[in-house]
Image (tube, rainbow, N blue to C red; front, top):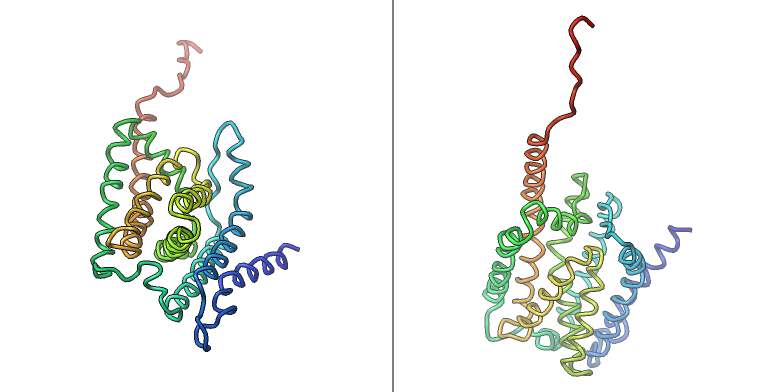
Length: 286
């Protein structure tokens, strides 16, 4: 029964993403997809994903000790990749075929797109520096490495195929997430609800989507969200948010081997310093 249910959910998710293109086909006479169509599409798809993933995360939060989610299997990594690629293709079609879509989502601003992307990327570097140096000074190198790897564990795959799928997904994810969750579910939603309510709803979605990394990472994702939204409303627009999120996904993933080496070195040093088991000495004549 698991396979049919999985296919039904996948088709439902795809249908929600394609809703704006089906209800108001851009190539036919007419106004094309409206902002409300975009909201219904992305809002429905987001609620479906959260409904499927939240119960497991909430169950772990209720435990006294947080246990990180297991690493992705080859099959899970492939599904993760397909999800992001499908979402990216639909959003690309919307951007190319919908009149006024670029202006609606602040894809076109006074600052050229490549420069906005680089400025957004550079805006993340102080956060990366702080996580590399300030956090270890506060809690200790070993604790900081353990915290970081526990949060990233879900994305640390064991097999080369799974690692490839996860890396490709992380290269696409910044564009799909900022497009859908900041561009549509914050910027477009603010036209209907006002900016404060749209910001609060966007924050709730962001934190819920990252519950799998554990409670110690929620404050980081809250800060990340507000900085990303600030870039979205700046002169850099959505391209600056793209660059910021691209750095926020790529640099931590590239940091994983370094943290693993630090953790292993620290553990090896502690093991070498601790005294081994005492072996009783034999008495002479025995």
